[in-house]
Length: 282
Image 1: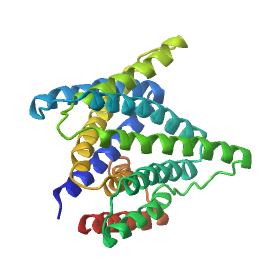
Image 2: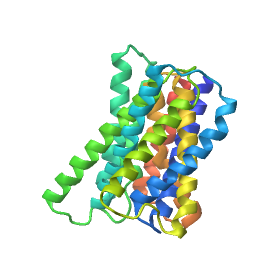
Image 3: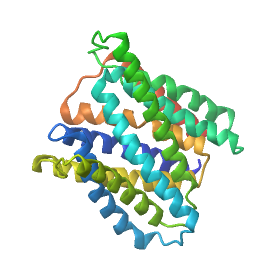
Image 4: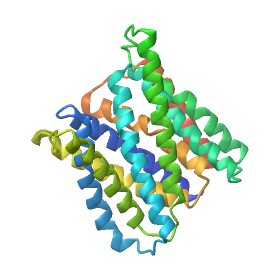
């Protein structure tokens, strides 16, 4: 088995854990403020890791990092907006699936040709995502106009997230972590400027800050793992593994918060596991 697939699976787990911790923090303070403040935790992880991952970034590596920062800030904003509009069972699978499709198509365009078994895993992943997000609450009787708006925002979020994964993948394998530092600084600057322009508070409530820092640290570690993984295997397969992050979020919800799984979520977990196995074997 290619070790890169294990690192890719690790990045998925870290992304899912970061989403869970960030979601808990967002219950104690506004989600955008939590996102902005989480950048401090993310930068701390990157600065600690830099001495252990030496590299010399080229100018284009830093530009790809800056582009990733723009996509990261915009993607987070759109994701939170789509989830706030609801229902989650519509928004979440849409931006997850679109975020998966974009890098898969990009991988094909640049000549990647995974094995047949790996393609089975790629095909299973989109089917698992709607099931993973399907809670017992259903769609809540939203109007068609509202659902169309949710779909538009969620689709936009997926497109931006997909390009974020592409931007990180285009950072050279010998660039070190500086481009990821640039990405985080750009994202923080954009979100902070947005709040400052509207004269809104720049800090979340004190109760939300530890969770925000933890979410940022986990997200940053996930970015590093994904960056390592994508230089050891096809972007189409690594992006698929990353897209299965909701499985980790659901597991943590059950373990930490005692949330019950719906039957569709159980099937979704099974499909997600099968996708990971197929991709790893491929």
